[in-house]
Image (cartoon, rainbow, N blue to C red; front, side, top):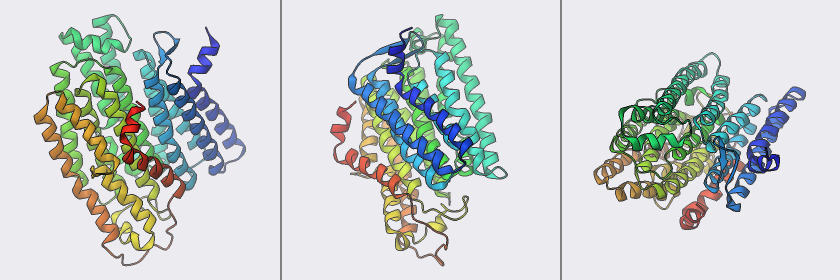
Length: 459
């Protein structure tokens, strides 16, 4: 084994492992939450830089043939995921999560990075479980007796069902193709017979569950609401990005069969409609963004039916725009108050009069998630629906656009509550939002909005 190659190409993963060890030792020696969170922030930032350097170098390395490989696309995907994790980890510093949360978050990030370089279903499954298992515990940390326990249980049960579905699909593909390599997914689709198509459909359904696609979405609202604010932000961005990018690695640039394309159109469209309609009835920003994430997962999976060359560009750009704006919304929520009620719409009433920066940041996030130009969310949705139109699915693209307009109502409702209402009494324990985390989201978001062509050129 070439250890120099392993150390070089797996630098992001090794840095995360080192961070896990350091945060564990740190939490044993000193239980201050901010110390462990600081180590986790530095670790994620260093791993993101290492992944970006691998992407820039432009090489392709195979330290473990048939199991793990690194190319510019996978390295760039890791850099994006780890970069989005930095402001999320800054929220854990502000919220003073228990010190044991830091190694769990880094462990989940390690699984995500492992999954993005997987060349076999074995490595993919290990990465998926390493990404998911720590989050079950993190959700439970939010409230062990109330919504946190219920959300963690739903996530655990349905997450286990998703893992079993993935294994069953991989077994069927192995029976049809004789290989556990992830290329057996596209090979099985190309064969067109019942056994491999059933296996491919089961694998796809497993990733639908991880991304909370209707009707496999039931865990998301309760898990998002029961978890603490930083963990909710982590699930809404990192977990969703990891699942989408891993699914993207499975599809590659292959042409889809009509059956798989239909699955990638029907259920995501149902997610857009259901997510946007249900979000209208929510009075909690956290639960509202949970249903919003269900709709956005539908937009992302729509990109898979487009030409293979444009999939990676559209999905990664969308994840950058969506992730930055989603984390910004959570970071801008003022600190203080009870965890369960701090992000409710009544508490956000008149926020502009009390904290103008927080209100403007949340408003920018809402408008971008709604796809209002010239914010980055508009460019991201344009790329998605352009791919669908170029693939010849015009009626589906029109239906998706109509479904996306349904979401404008509840995004504007949040803005209306912040800018056009006056609270009966201002919360006494309200503190400033996380300014540094907000800045880490706002600055790149402005760059993405002003120079989208330059950002796309990096892909």
